[in-house]
Length: 101
Length: 182
Image (tube, rainbow over all chains, first blue to last red):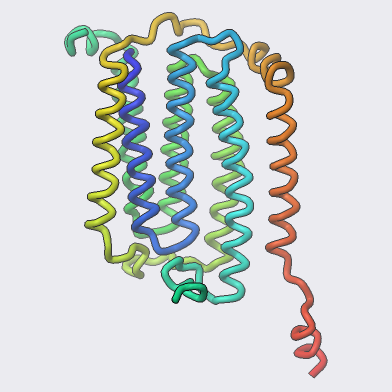
């Protein structure tokens, strides 16, 4: 196995996440695309850990941190989406133009 | 390293199968017109990622990914879809009409990232990943060298939990009281 086969797959996942982020209208689907991007970062961290074999397993530790922060992000993000839906009767990000001029 | 040498390693056959599954399901995550299907495709993507982590001898991270993501985060997403009544049928306009621009941007990003990693690593090989990272090493690192970030991330989770409850809870506002009274 070479390093680049994982890095290019992660780059593909990240680009797909960016595509979804730009294309999706529903806020829940946007959060789903963000999860794809975070997942790509996790792959990179674990691959670099497998490449350098640090004594503290730094890459895997930081992958666990990313997973934790992603879980917190989903919790807060969905709470905000639910609040916006309750107030605006819509969870589409292109209809949230209250602060746009 | 030539392609013939690369393809002759059995572990790379496993990689190709898993990578195709991950890439295909990730494409469906961002293109599926059914929100529930998109979430379920993300489950497949994450399961494939966990398989990649097992290939890279990161068992603990793989199982954490399965537990936290497939076990908890996906359920949160399904709750979010059900509560916000996201359109679950076909042809209801889940995407905006700027797919061309988004495709150009993401393709350019993919090209830049691929070029950067190819020029940085070339065909550098992953050596000596046979035996796997013991969970003991991770535990000692998390509660030793990285104990401060570990505690901070725990506090972040607590703050997110309390914040999520506070944000999503329906408060009894004066308007509600009036509406109920009148």
